[in-house]
Length: 112
Length: 111
Image 1: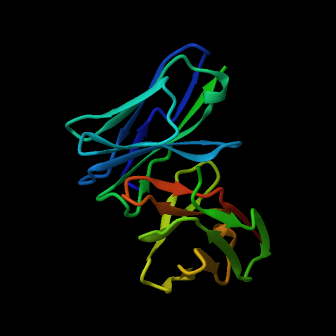
Image 2 (image 1 turned 45 degrees about the horizontal axis):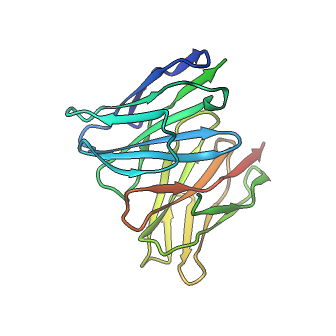
């Protein structure tokens, strides 16, 4: 158990809908990372937060947004969903940037 | 874009044999990390090697780093069926804020 909790584990929705994925980092970790993993794109970095502030942005679509709250949990919002958004979405946390990441078990999103 | 690229893409070995996989990266790094992912599960951190280190061991794992060639290798000795997984190398960006993963090496250990 990595100590990182992600909900929901599975989510099935329709195109055009909006979903929110939630992540609770390990106790004491200030950095939260979001990744998307699909068969054709591999593991893609989306965004990183440190203590509530956005630190780095990767290949995150404009339809996607994220935030980190004062209690350090984070949410990834995906809107106007398309079939191609079907993927595993991982949250990871670390004490400091550049150090080892601890991953949650992921949220598997299926868009029909 | 992916900073690290693993080679080979897939590897099949007999239980008890050693497995070696390589990672090449493009820009200077402060450290390089290796992760394991069992099918459909979250990634698990295996080992971090700093840029001033050449070799590091952790149990049956041995990692080397050659900064002049911008490459790293992961050796799993005396493999077990439980080692069947995908293995990824990961490198931080220059400001350490982004950790990029390669496409991974899928290792299958046959009983």
